[in-house]
Length: 371
Image (tube, rainbow, N blue to C red; front, top):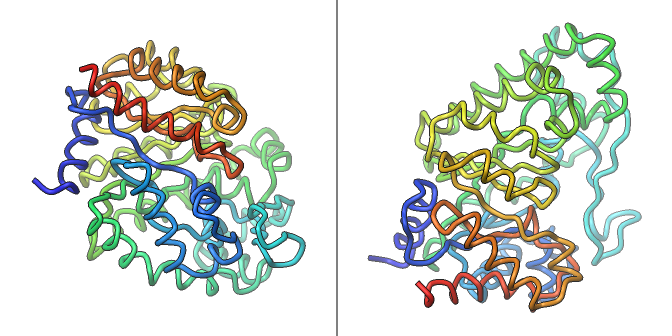
């Protein structure tokens, strides 16, 4: 069996909550990969071949079982949040500082009606070009290089498990409208917002199904993300009405097409873990970012789904090495060993202590020897 297939099988076994020979370890955090390889962030964001090489060398050095980003270009975030992306070396961001998202109320209330009148694609194209210029054209090298990046990773025996991002209409319009204004809209004009969200969702579902059905290379897995429309941000009634119903349909679509939904659960989902029990078991990865109580999450979700994470960014940056190792071993024993994937909580931070990052690798390798 090839190293690539061995790693795919190991992750799939974890998703099914079956015994594994070694706890899978997935990478996350493209900026940290650039820092580790001492690559200037300006160059990392503008040269996709260098970007891929940087990520690949990091993943090989840490002996990961898979990646969540064969390559990464911050410009594509415009499609998720519709907020301004500030790049290293462009304008106010220095050459080796992290990219930034500047959220502002760029979408006006009247745009809800414009979206319904124009259709979302026409509105989005006009909105992005008016507000942000040619940022998507500048991202073209990312899209054209992506198949090559996947091939390079697979030739190195490293599978990619997140080859696209299924962002909900809640997240997209919240970023365009700004958080405070968007929440006001949900309270003051819920019917108008919901009608618009439904339209955007219908468009998204058609696009995502086409990706799964018609793409020459169907994704092995995708992120299904939620960071604002969460149980920690919204009341249960608002969460169910404006966020969860869309996210649930994305997860169902993934399962229908045998694509792994990697539920990238930024923010605090502790009060919402029970919702995932409504979906088919042993089909998804619940990726927690350090804000959700991961131990409570396992109590609630039980043996229904695989959990990934959640070594916190603060611990990887500022923790003591022994404490990081002990926490990783606790995760293996209490969240796993079956149905658990080792990973950082969301991204490995740009300012990580890489001796601390190494403890994730050490823990899974040491535990396999103990077994």
